[in-house]
Image 1 (tube, rainbow, N blue to C red):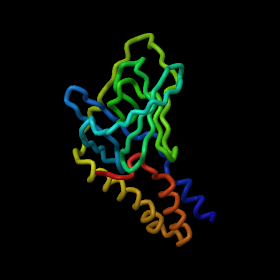
Image 2: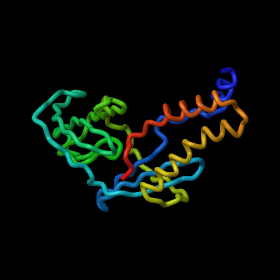
Image 3: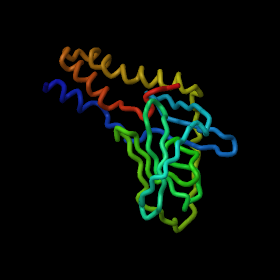
Image 4: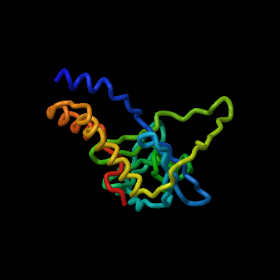
Length: 187
C-alpha cells in the first residue's frame, strides 16, 4: 500500500471545475470547452434542450421566492428552483429555459448541487472574456470518448510504471471515484 500512496502523491490534483461554458443566446447554442490530456477541446450543442415540468411548489432561497421545476438531462433527474423576481431564463452549467433565474438545482441523488448564495453589484464593470486558443473542434460524443480514454489511461499509467496488481486496481478505483460526470449519458 505504500507503493500506492507514492503513486497517489505523483498524480497532480484536479481542479474542481475544469471546463468553461459559453451560452450564445442570439445563436441559440452552448459552447463547451475543456482541456483533455493537454488538448484544448470544444463542442457546441443546442441551448434549448430541456423539457421542464413546472410544479406549484414554492420555497424561499437566498431571499427570493422560488418555484420548483424538474427535468431529465444527461442520464440524471434534476430538481430546479427558479425565481421570476430575476427575469433571466438562465442558470448554472448548461441549464436554461425557465421563466426566471435558476437559484438552486440538484440531481435527485444529490451528487451535484448548485445554489445561489448571494447577488452583489460589482464596483466596476466586469469583462467576460472568451478564451482565445486553438481548440480541437469536435462533437459531444467524440469529446466524451476522449474523456473516457483519458480516465482509462490512469490505470494504464500505473501498469506502465511497474506498480503491482493491487496498486493498479486501486488506481482504477480512484479513477472511478474521481469521475462522476454531471452528464452520465452523452447523446
